[in-house]
Amino acid sequence: MRHPHRNTARSLHVAATAVAMMTISACGSTYVDDELLAESAAATSTTTAPPADTATSTPASTVAGDVAAAVTELRSLLDALSDAVVDDDADAAALLTNVDQLWAEIEPTLRADHPEALFPMEQAVLLATTSVERRRPADASKGALILRDLAATLIN
Image 1 (tube, rainbow, N blue to C red):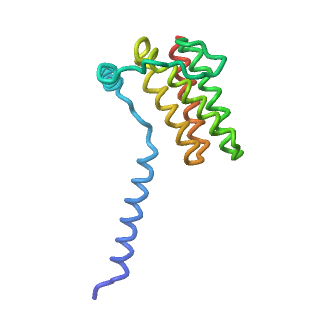
Image 2: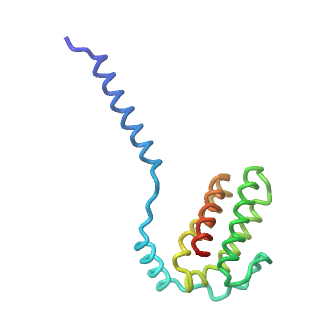
Image 3: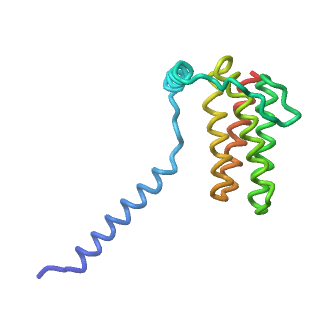
């Protein structure tokens, strides 16, 4: 005589184990190959021309072309953005506009002088955008952490 309950229990156990393994593996750390980043930056810089006019209004505390100042300013904007999204504040959209303006100003300099900083800065800006669009303050906080690490790299 077969035990149908035993087969069902075994199937459920296997399925639960598979789901648990996929969930745990999704939380693993991310590895970014520096060679691929360099290749991507080289390909992007040769195929995409930087904006011809960067005369948009920018935050007053940023000096055009100063990467360290831009990273610091962008990090403070993302910290404020995270708080604004948490509070469901209307200032979040204005802060995102400042982030976009700062990014437009500093991107040509990054492409020319600091291609290694291009990917992390772009990633932080994209996280700021999703933070506001999807009301996810943690995304802005992640962007700020990326910029903290970038600032440490640029200073050293």
